[in-house]
Length: 104
Image 1 (cartoon, rainbow, N blue to C red):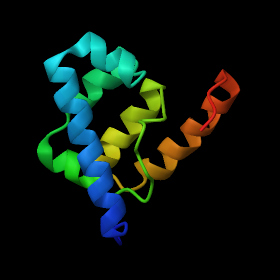
Image 2: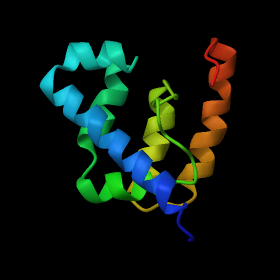
Image 3: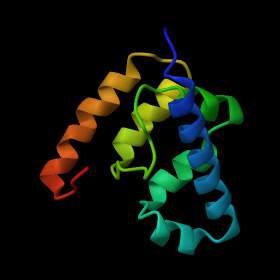
Image 4: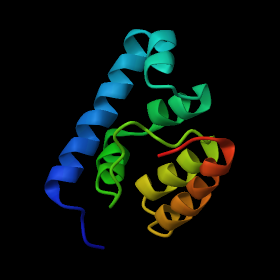
């Protein structure tokens, strides 16, 4: 599997670390500032450092954690754990968020 360009990977990893640190410092404020569902926050906090690095290599810019559905993040966590087919599945599930009124 080829990796995303290093600039995207670095940006994703930096952002994921920022969100996790914010959640650990002040969960309620971070949930509000990043507009995160609490289940998504729990999923992010449950990822290992290796899983975060793998997730950062996704060919998708994660800045903004634009996906709100926990099911999307469940698929992304599976991708981070090593199941390559979970990334396209996450993107397909995420398409449904437009129907929920969220615009990328």
